[in-house]
Image 1 (cartoon, rainbow, N blue to C red):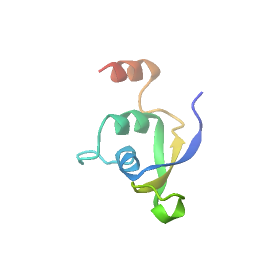
Image 2 (tube, helix red, strand yellow):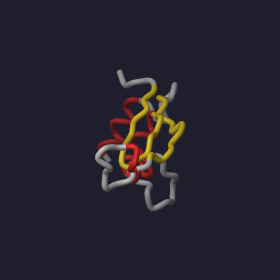
Image 3 (cartoon, helix red, strand yellow):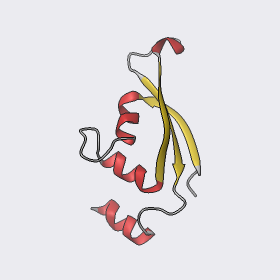
Image 4 (tube, rainbow, N blue to C red):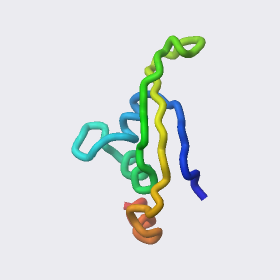
Amino acid sequence: GPPSRCTVTLQHEVVSRIAAAPDTDEYGLITLLLQLRYTVESRFRIGADCFFPPPEVESSCITLRRREVPLLSPSEARTFKRL
């Protein structure tokens, strides 16, 4: 099954989309699909100078924890994803 917790470093824009709140410009499909199964626990920026060579994009670290009870049942989630 899916991991119970994962901590990843991604481009800052992607982290902003994953952690977005409803009615914001960043809120979208990736937000909906991940937040059905996971809660966002922490996030912080990582400076470009922490990498070699420094990337041309900003990075952030995010921790996702799997919900003990998903927001939708499996059959509801399948329908939701198809929509």
